[in-house]
Length: 156
Image (cartoon, rainbow, N blue to C red; front, side, top):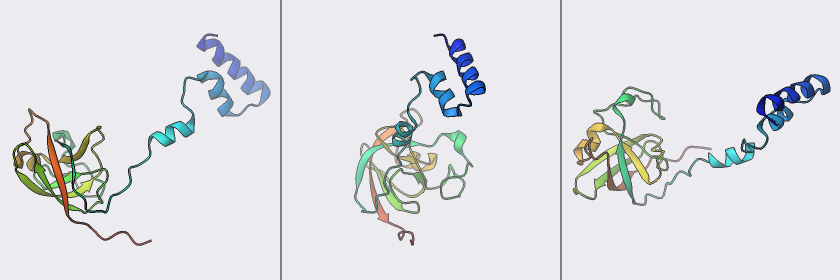
């Protein structure tokens, strides 16, 4: 059945039979759309890690176009500041980020969530990235992140 025909059939059923909108989506999608529960499970947020453990992975730098945008903690992204994004470290954490290729380190404050690219564990402000030798040309570097100050857990 062509898509146009399936939409017409769905509309006739909807108008004539009083079907709910989810039935329309089932006829129209014909199995092409993922089930709602499948979509929800794919977007599960990572757990916040308060262990203080070191982690190793890739660091990248915030795009210059993100300058001034609001971060997860409400502050504006300052490309000249010592701010960073992590998916798992609590917001407000101070961490030492060491470029394992150059040995250079910088202290940053986790103020945002991300990066959302597999294998990357931190996004750094352009100034912080430059301080440890991550150039625009290279874009990423293997780093070690060591949390130095963890904020108190939220009250429940």
